[in-house]
Length: 239
Image (cartoon, rainbow, N blue to C red; front, side):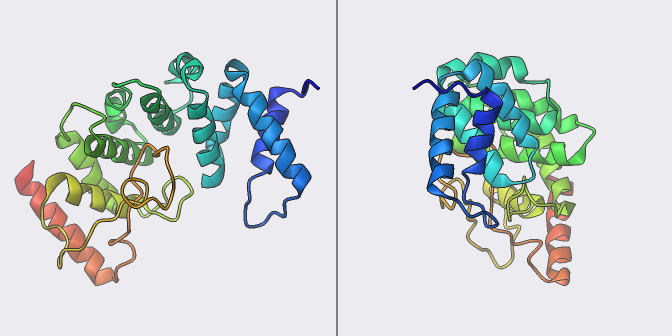
C-alpha cells in the first residue's frame, strides 16, 4: 500500500524512532521509522533539504542519523547537497562537506578552507578539525598549513562540546595537532585515540571532524595551563 504521508512526516517518524535515553519506543514507532526511512530514501529531492534542517538539532543522535541517511541516498543526493552548500551557515557546510566527500567529491574538504576566516570562532574551529581529519584520511591534497594549525591552536581555549557529543573542541584540537605535527605536545606522551577514525565508538560513515579522547579539558587546571603554554611555545617557533 503506498505511503502518502508528506516527506516532513517521514523525517519526524525516523527521528522519533531513535532510541534516546528519555524515550520509550514501541514496535509501532520502529515500524513507522522503518517506513519513513524507506520513503525518504526513495525521494532525495524532497528529503535532503528537510534532513539538512535537522542538523541544527542539539542532539548528536539526530545529526548522526541525518548524516547517515543522506549518505545512504548515494549519487542522487550529491547535486542537491551541492546546491545547498553555502546556503545554511558554516557549521552545516562542514557536515555537507563530509557527505559530499563520502559521495565522491574529492575537493569537498578543500572548499572548507575559507571557513578558517569565518567570524564565528566555533565555525573556524570545526572547519579546522574537519581539514585535520581530511588530511589524516588523505581526503585532501593540501598539507595542514599555518591557517589550519593556527585555528587548532586557538581552539585549545574552546571547551564547548563538539556538535552535541561528549567530546570537546579543545580536546580534539589538541589530538589533531599531535597527530598532524608529530610534536611532543603532551608530557608524558599519551596514545591519541580518535573515536570516529581508528577506535570506532561511532561506526562509519565517518563524521567530518575529529572526535578525540580529551587530554586537555579533563586534566587538572595546572596541567591544562601547561599544555596550552607548551603548544603556544611550539607554535611561536613553528609558524
